[in-house]
Amino acid sequence: MVPFWHIDGTNASDYGTERRQAWHQPVPFEAKALVRLIRRVLAWVVTGQSRRRSAAIASTLLNVDQHEHRETGSVSAAQAAEWDARYSEGEGARWSGRPNGRLVAEVASLTPGRALDVGCGEGADAIWLARRGWTVTAIDVSDVALIRAQEAAELAGAVVEWVRGDALQTPFPAGSFDLVSMQYPALPKAAGEAPMRALLGTVRLGGLLLAVYHDLNDEHREHIKSQGIDPADYVDAGDLARLLEDEFTIELQAVEPRIDPPPDHRHIADVVLRARRR
Image 1: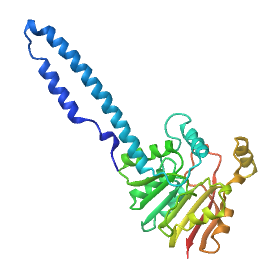
Image 2 (image 1 turned 135 degrees about the horizontal axis):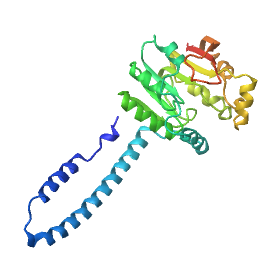
Image 3 (image 1 turned 90 degrees about the vertical axis):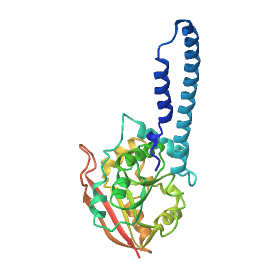
Image 4 (image 1 turned 30 degrees about the vertical axis):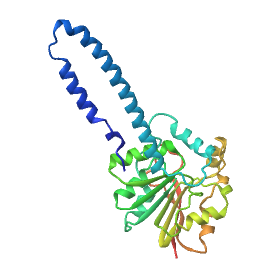
């Protein structure tokens, strides 16, 4: 992965140091007017070069970002904008930067292989997996989240393939992942069952699906509805379990205490679904 902030124009800085040293040598009085003129011209040239260099670096960042966050499938502009807005609220990261406790508890003992992190957000789970030896692909619709995830991965020395796209519309190869992780996914029912089945089909034979949902009571559901989001519009653990019946063995489907919840968090229990493809 390209270390963006290492693109620093070092040679230009060295040149600038040498130039400043040269211009600080004693200059004959009669040449001072010419020196001032040349300095102004050089300042204008260097400023222009600096601006062009900055533009080139910004362009490189954009191009690298577009390459590593592959545009696959047609992402709903409204959905992406909604999540970008959520991640832009307040200052700094939206989440803690720690991997989800349930993922850690369920996966820590597994032999690393290839993993898909669905709805990866700011990347904490994907980075944790990568640092434990997994080959990780992480997908999210939000550019804001993915930029933060990529920066965090570089700081952690983790290599992750970041994909900007809709997990239900991205054609990942069938049977290509040893682990598919869905931590509190927001997958709309309106997409239909076929895209969900295709996503589940990316788990290889013998591979693991781990899906974790908030255990919502009526009060929580009404609270979410008051914010303009109806949980009934999204695939829940029960819906997912019905889709798994033909090709997966469900090893666990239960309400479990949430591991390491954020302080003052409303949701203190999770619905955990762990299934192995057969």
